[in-house]
Amino acid sequence: MHNEKREKVVVIGGGFAGINLCKRLDKKKYEIALIDRNNFHCFPPLFYQIASSGLVESNICFPFRRELKRMRDVSYHMGHVKNIDLEKKEVTTSYETIPYDKLVIAAGATNNYFGMDHLPEETFGIKTVAEAAHTRDEILDRLERGALCKDPERRKQLLSFLVVGGGPSGVEIAGALGEMKKYILKKEYPELSPDDVTITLVEGAPTILGAMSEKSRNNALKELKELMVNVRLNTVLKSYEDKYVTFADGHKEYYETLIWTAGVKGEPMPGIPAEYIGRGNRIVTDGFNRVKGLEDVFAIGDIALVQTDATPNGHPQMAQPAIQEARNLAKNLNAGEFKSEFKYKDKGSMATIGKNRAVADLPGLSFSGWFAWMIWLFIHLISILGMRNKLSVLMNWFWNYLFYSTSLRLLLRPTKYPLRRHWGD
Ligand SMILES: Cc1cc2nc3c(=O)[nH]c(=O)nc-3n(C[C@H](O)[C@H](O)[C@H](O)COP(=O)(O)OP(=O)(O)OC[C@H]3O[C@@H](n4cnc5c(N)ncnc54)[C@H](O)[C@@H]3O)c2cc1C
Image 1: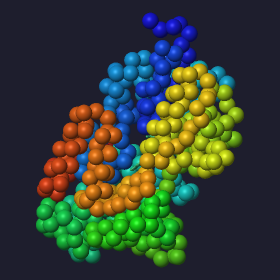
Image 2: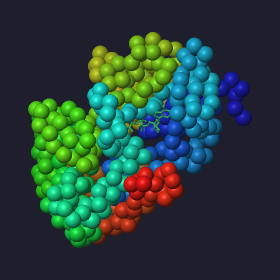
Image 3: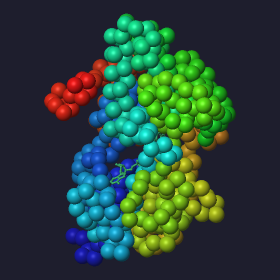
């Protein structure tokens, strides 16, 4: 039996931060409502594999209702947050209004187009599982159309891919496209030659993987080159219109498909006044993840800018800070007092460029190649929720490793009007 005076905690977002908080909060002390616009928890580090047909959505997504069954007393509320009323202590979603005693915002981050408002319409992304699936469809569509095209110039246009952003996501999707060009074309698209396909990765900074060691950056560059990806550093995109990219130096180039991985910003949270928002649209908190200046409101994960004297720019927008902040906040909330200040334990970072090709910076150690790739596979596999998902990912990877082929290159399109627009109707 629960004590009658349980406080109600509303958690916005069931990503790495939100789900870990829900798991660890004391259910005898708190009644918990989890709001998420998707009915599943997912694993963003493998979104690029959805986009490149290495995995399917259900391999790396996990329905909340299944996970929450294990976490008794957490109720799931599907909905997009439309407003937070800080006075009334209520969150309004697309479908309902939910009162809270304590509010934890864990809504993550979204694409940042740096004010280029036309880009969301014109470009593809891998920031959500839905975006990654849309990107996969685009890639498959262009391959098929390229295979049908008799005009060599137009064929090259159809098969020109630009990845913008040289962080881990950009490097991973560019590497996956490179593998497709180097190994998959000749097996599955006999009409096409690798020379028909252009894959370019542009990065505004003088280096890719800016947060990693110089050794890892150089190794990643070498691996991308081997996979026939053109990498251009110090190259900034200014606009993309009618399939023409204009770069900062004024020159224009045609790219049929532009995949945007160049930046993120905190997910907008209507109702949180601008004075509580800091750099990168993140909600500013103290070292205990309490939103500075607000009672009973907390922020964790990518959306939180944990600003202390030691961390004026917060922590990296990565899985580990999100998980660790969630665990620390749960510890403080369960204790009923804020004694434990958050301290980030950096466990290192990794990026994979393709089969047997990865780079890893672990504390005190930097390595690359097959061993880094095996470690990368292992860490990602154990981090995915659910045994069924782990086994299906392992099976797909194993098959892909042996044959460079998966049966996942499916282009699913509705045939019913008005969704027939894909067919040019
Ligand atoms: C393609 C990609 C690759 C990445 N690779 C790595 C990697 O290799 N290693 C690493 O450490 N990190 C990686 N990251 C970053 C990592 O995924 C994030 O740091 C982590 O997911 C942050 O966790 P979070 O809980 O703060 O946010 P998320 O995991 O993004 O969860 C936010 C949740 O909030 C929900 N939500 C958002 N807005 C609303 C709203 N308005 N209403 C309702 N629900 C909402 C979303 O549906 C989502 O479920 C990658 C991210 C991406 C996109």
